[in-house]
Image 1: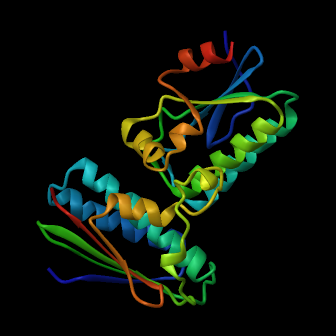
Image 2: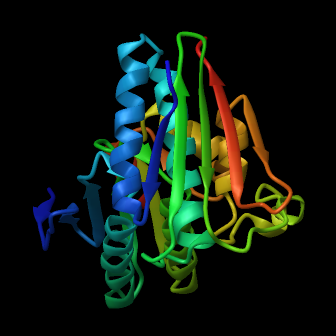
Length: 132
Length: 122
């Protein structure tokens, strides 16, 4: 199956595309647990790309590319922002960070997806979830 | 016996004595706008109370984002600053797992049921 490519300039648009992605997972019999995990990770990725990367600038585009097979869903989310150093993101589960209201998105993506990797610049995310 | 109080499209609010019970109505607390609205309403409740006692009922919540966790953390701090109490209850297992993964189950007081939460605040 060919990859689905969507250009996004708002979170609302991103969520609609995410819903279509999740519909495909359900259609292929992915478990509820897996669909939940992918929904959470994709929403976090979109939030990071559009809110943080593109700073909600409607002139800037984010891109969501996904391919669903019976074996896995492969997802790429990119933005036109400056990127970030994903190695420097503090661990939100450390005692000193527990009461901070931000900084959990990347951690949750890593917890729920099987593959989470960024390009060197930090503005393109690649995630994979296997159909278990 | 609880009495209905001010509600909105995002939540129903009841009073049970000096305890405010907030039942979140959104299945998905993911969209930024809904998170902001929920946060604003909850923070207003805390601001209005001398010593806030608040239960947030998650019965209807099936999806949540890290931004929503952030709202809860900020709320928790504000309640604590006023020497109040905040309880979360009726959290579905998949959502509770998010609290565990982030260790926020160690920060928040989480009850299985509304009755248990009310008992804790008595």
